[in-house]
Length: 205
Image (tube, rainbow, N blue to C red; front, top):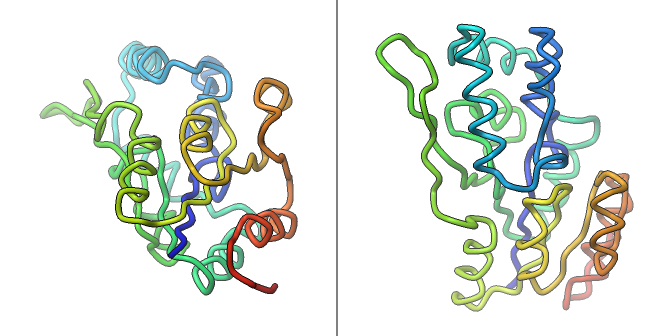
């Protein structure tokens, strides 16, 4: 049995924090795991900026409600689900994900939770577990799944390394340079081909 594990932001949907940064004009919120490999450092920076500007969870959710999946993403997910079990492994939060997951047909999503106070201020976050993407791949392997994974950022690379096959998709040049062991593609058609190549079954487009 084979399972496909995908990152969410930058692979299937826009980067939520970048969209929010553009809406608010706060340039420092544009940093993502493509820029800062340490997720806790990145999130503490985000929480500090939200607090400094008095921004609340609903402010972010209002921006997310306007976002759509990347062009071709819905068709790609449908194509993949016809050929593999599909799970989204993301460092996003359930409090963010609903509008975008609805547009993708609600594939299974494993991610984290935000912690808010009584005034809807985001005060902290709760990781599902340490190194969650890699741990998920390990768990699927323990269930005797063959895992093919695709992602775009530093925080995806342990998942890609642990999988039987890892693919970089829409990755920036710095990530591609640092992880030359993974094939790097930039279109969904090429990503389909990489999944077909990585599969141990005879699949077709």
